Length: 279
Image 1 (cartoon, rainbow, N blue to C red):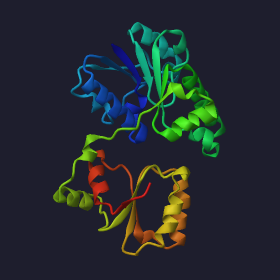
Image 2: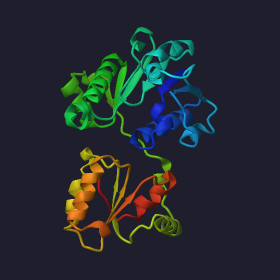
Image 3: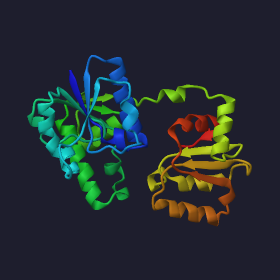
Image 4: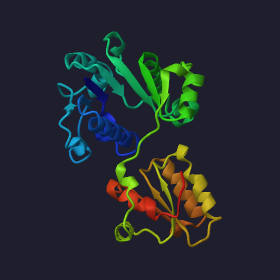
């Protein structure tokens, strides 16, 4: 069978949605090698995650036929290519399906990670709220089946979008196998030296944005033994300015380490070196 994926984030996203997409695609290709997996992405950035398909001859990377209008191709124009490519099942890995796919006879699945845009609309601009909500509602209405990554997400789909619970399957997210391997003391020590990590630290991993509530963690640090520091790994947004202002106000600058662009292969060692993970 030929299975298609909305693989934009698999190729371009370094955080949660990208990790989920890459893990799922690789797992299916490994455990069900009899299928062909066509990965549709508007572009590929050399040196990013283009190599995640290596070793899988049953994966094909599919790009737009011409330059420009990549967003339109992903949201609408792709449909005729799915038909031409003989796709029998198309999986939207993050909240959306291309418009018009419901008229093709192609079976569809969509993964919904959360309904933050509906629960906390204040974190999104007006135009983004409209775009995300429109795509989410269409995908949930159109999909043959919906994958929710938690029971809470399933409950939100039922309550906020009035989706039948019988249409939703809860499938918990997987984890890269590297996190299941115990790192040696020597390797952890080398990683700690590479990033100048403190001896004992609390770890927070995630984009520094308002909804992740790093401010609360910084406030709480005042109540923790002074020898324990906080290591924050993640891309910064405008919210980071408020966090750093609070750090200066509380005089905690010497107790907090910010890291960006951490190599993925080093993350397991950092997790295993932490005294506590705060999420």
